[in-house]
Image (cartoon, rainbow, N blue to C red; front, side, top):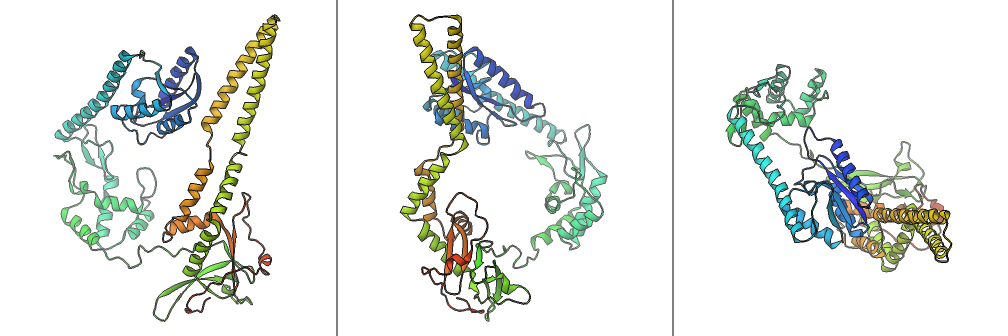
Length: 499
């Protein structure tokens, strides 16, 4: 039987990687005792048994089970698999559909209806444990809050927690809190305050400079005005900032003036570093200009013309939006055709089959065939009465080789990501139906398909990505000069005049 191991340990100060090592060691011993070949180990660290969403290795194991390369999952005990009966049941169903059973290294679960009842009972106990622990922790925190003790493990900046679990002012930090509030009330920005704190050499508890986000967090923390509660229970905490100063700062934050372009993203030129002047071969760069109405327009311009002193290049300036839209439309029309998609899909599948992984798999399969052929020959010799000590040793050696190669092949197939033609066609067709108004989609389409663009005064030449080789250097524009197949790009004239 081929199997994989799953191990996990929960968050906590006493939980370390030694827990994983111990679980794996016991599971390996169980596999050896039961003549099971272990193909892989999946391990989640610092993850609760009730959290199935963030258990990356667990979810990868469930997905890998669909490849049907292993027949069982070995876990140390039932609670390592999970502590939520509903999620456990759903994942068991998924494994069962894929022909995978769960084995427990340190718990004996018999087959049959009795085993099902016992396993369900133990799953319920695991869920009960985590829920009981959660209630006990919350009850303990409520009791601590009723006694005026700190509930959280770490005090906010400006405080510390004493031996009796009470909040106390930390003078070497509290002056920084007052400094931030007073200067913010006086009208200074977070950037100004941050610069002043850096000059004063103020550090956070990690020994790093306080950040702008740290200042905003500080200004919003109501503990500094003596408000600290847990589950509606007030907890005493020293007041560092009086209510008047707090109200002053928050009145400013509420009515803080914002510049009109404070959150405006810079203009992105989607063809940057892939568009060239067809007249002189220079890279084309972005430029902006203001029209008579005051509106700002963006263009692509030959870099040689833009340098000081100008250039003899006669290439016109092109409107950014019109040119980008045209290139994107041409890409969709030229590349995303049924015949081209079919050709690309065939090539991608062919390339994926040339991978090192495929070569290793083919090598293992060839070695397995050779070992099986030799084994068959030895068995034929034995059947014909040829039985010597060397024949027996050779028989055992070949049987071991056959099992080893089968295990290696199963491991490679488990790791192998098979790319099918249908998957490639589906992925390419997504570009057909993409949102052409979405900048992210437009940029992704250009990155995938467009190698470079050459602009002339009377035509545009697009060079598409056509192989898996690296052609990062620009193509020689001379090869396009005599082309009779081209399209003109026209639009209404703006200042400066464009074509």
